[in-house]
Structure formats: structure tokens, C-alpha cells
Image (cartoon, rainbow, N blue to C red; front, side, top):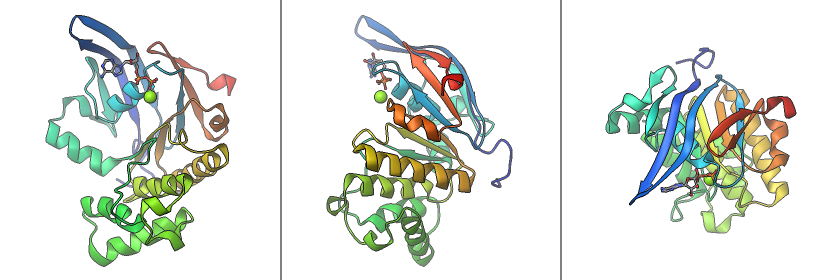
Length: 235
Ligand SMILES: Nc1ncnc2c1ncn2[C@@H]1O[C@H](COP(=O)(O)OP(=O)(O)O)[C@@H](O)[C@H]1O
Ligand SMILES: [Mg+2]
């Protein structure tokens, strides 16, 4: 699908509920969530700790199955897919950025990006070249051969951004990507993610409870006790 396809990165949730059950304890983390995120938007999901943000993001990314409800990505219902089809779909279409970077410690920055390109069928010299270009885009051209342990937190998160952008997926999701960073590197990382996502026509869904990040968003939605509230007007 091309970058200019209107539905390329659309994310839709319909009546998504999540009930966690452990023993006799039953906890409803999400009330019926209906949500549509437009292709190409930078959407921020905010809310207090425990409000269900990670649960919702995990469901929208196909990492967690909701108790009830449907999720559509790029016009396909992911809540109907088999495990193997969903795993493939996720690898092709979603770049994920985690709070704690989740880089492979034994691999260099370039190799961390190449692994993702390899999974997407881009191999050898082509993958090495694309990894280098991606690292240059995030300002780490000279750090390509360093391992995560030799990089600062902000640099590690920029490697994670390069990796999430590898292969130009239509959707990028990030769960508190700046939580482990100081405010200056946090802002640099988010600004970079915003610019590259806009250039690539990606939809970005980002969870944060950092109010300083909201300037970069097209929309801000608030989650409170598992209920969504659109707060874009308050931005
Ligand atoms: N695997 C789980 N089992 C039981 N309860 C869970 C589980 N994961 C999360 N919860 C509960 O669901 C609520 C929402 O959690 P979470 O989605 O992680 O919120 P947030 O990311 O907004 O902090 C919390 O009360 C949390 O304790
Ligand atoms: Mg969370």
C-alpha cells in the first residue's frame, strides 16, 4: 500500500472491553472503548497510572486479545486473525517503541535495525545500507557500530525509533517512550519521531503522561478508569 493511501494507517476500536481475571478477582481495565485514529495522525493517549493505557495500546497493537470488541488496522480486523497471521501482520505493519528501549544488548545499533529489516525481507547489503540511512536520520550515523551499553538513554531511544521506522510501517506505537529520559532528550526524541513519522506518512499512537509532549500531537485523548475522553480541545 502506498504512502498516500487514505486508509493506510487507520486504527479503529469498536466496543473494546478488557477484564483481567485472576482467581476470583475480576478487574475491568477498559470499559467499552470506541475510537478511530485517522491515518497519518499523531495521536497521544494520556491518563493517570493504572487508567488502562498500556492495556489499550497492547490491544490495538494485537499483543493482547480484548475480552470483547473488535480492532481494525488498515481496514483488516486483527481480532479475527489467527495467531500466526497476526504475528506476521504486526511485524509488517507496526513499529513498536518501548519505555525501556528493548534493544538487543549484544548487537550494535546498526545490527539492531538490520534485524527488523531482515524480518521484513530486506537482507544483506541493502539492509546494511538502509540501517545506516535510518541511523543517520536519527542523528546516530557515527554511533552505528556501538552497542547499546555505550549509548546514552536518549541515543538508545533514537536507535529504537530508527528500528521502529525500518521498512516504513504504516503504524508506529510507543508506550511512554520518554519515561526513562531526562526532559531535554525526551523532547528531542519525540520531535524526531514526529518529523520522521510525518515524512513517512505514518500514524503514530503514543502513550505518555508527560504533559510537555502534547505540543507535537494532532490529537490528545484522555483515558480515565478505562473510559476514553477526547480532550483535544484542551490542548
Ligand atoms: N495482567 C494483568 N492482570 C491483572 N490486572 C492487570 C494486568 N495488567 C494490568 N492490570 C490492571 O489493569 C489496570 C490498568 O493497567 P495498565 O493498562 O497497565 O495501566 P496504565 O498503563 O495506564 O498504567 C491497572 O489497575 C492494573 O493493575
Ligand atoms: Mg502503562
